[in-house]
Length: 587
Image (cartoon, rainbow, N blue to C red; front, side, top):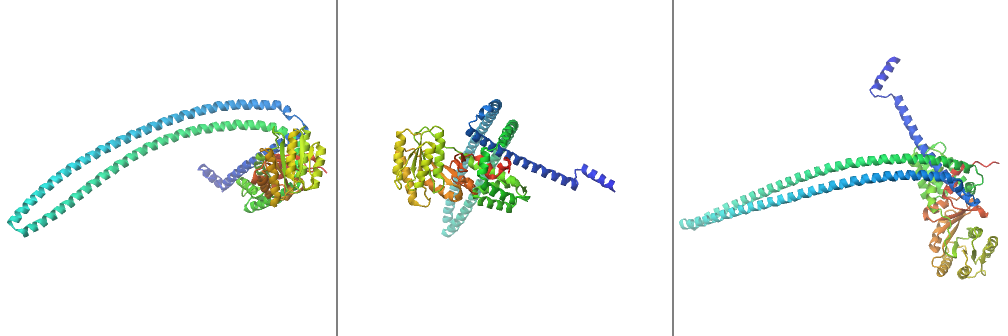
């Protein structure tokens, strides 16, 4: 019996039939292949995030330590540039050939179309001439027929009148009347018959004309269809050639990417083993925000499918982490694209989150760049307690360390502690400070500061302002006055209007940004106190909505804890992806 079953299966397999076990095995193999593709794509995305974060961190550390990283990689970069130049030259030659071929094809097609249009025009002209000739002949025939008809009518009328005269003479008036009525009836019948014959003739001529036009249009459509098919064949041929060229270009690009990835891996290994780097500092500073979000993501996605319920939970989590509805939707959409109704890990969610955060923030990563204008006027604005005065002092110290001549204007004349705090920073950074009496007019003090900065050839004038609640109209009007005074002195100023935000206020930072942007013309942001809150995600929501440049972030109290903003590092740290790069701290 077993032999019979074996023979039966062998016979069925020859006919192309498959057993249930074979079908299940093939389906399992197909699912495994699809999952492998998704896993490979996810691994590639994580590698790209890690590479960008590590590269940015390494550049930040190099900038602080003064190490010339470019000198160490000079030989490698030169080799890469040479290889890229050779490859670009080859691509340019191929592109030129391809463009020439496409140009020739277009010229041939244009010539064919011109010939076709000329043929169509000649055909149309001949048709119109034939129609005109036929119409002339028809009119001639109709005129001749009309002439004959009129002659016959005249003859009949003459005969009728003669008959009437004869009847009147021979039979009298009554018989003449009867004859007249009979003749009128016969005339009416003849007229109706003539009208019927004329209508039939016109209908026949219209039908013949319509049939001829339909035949002509059908012949023209057939010719155009044939021409379109020939053009489609030629286009398919050109498309096949283009696809072949693109495939070759992708292969070469993949080879270059693999070579670059291998070299980058060595750099990443060195950066990953270094302790106390920029990435470590960022991860430590964002620990509260990262831990809250990372732990919640891990709790949601433990051996779980990404279904509608899971997506809703993840959206709620991201929104509660102050990332905002827009960012939450982008993350879940990115995940659902590849993983819906499949098991998803917490790391896959973190990678998707890092992708979205990096996409939003990278275009806004912009350090403060000073121009040649002197003095370079920097106006610092923000609400009470945002860290505005401390941030100004740290930046002043940084510019003085770079050898620039710095002047500080204590425009917060309503708070004695602000003047004292700025005075300490001025002494620490060896910068000159301009201050007034408590309660003095801030706009007048700013006017005097600009005059003195011009007279003393100051490089940077940094103006502090009083903390203002964004919902107090009278206080915001005072800030507007300060801005107007600055523009009277220099229409292009303030050259930088920096809004300092406190990360601990969460979503309230959105309303602050909107009001200060409209009132003072904010040109960039600095967010402070990220180390003291679990609401670090608000920076992402803020950037997604207002698209303002981000200059720096504060992740501690020390002067070095005010870091130039790096989007890849921030994304890796906030999402928790950086945890995969940084070894756990040893107790």
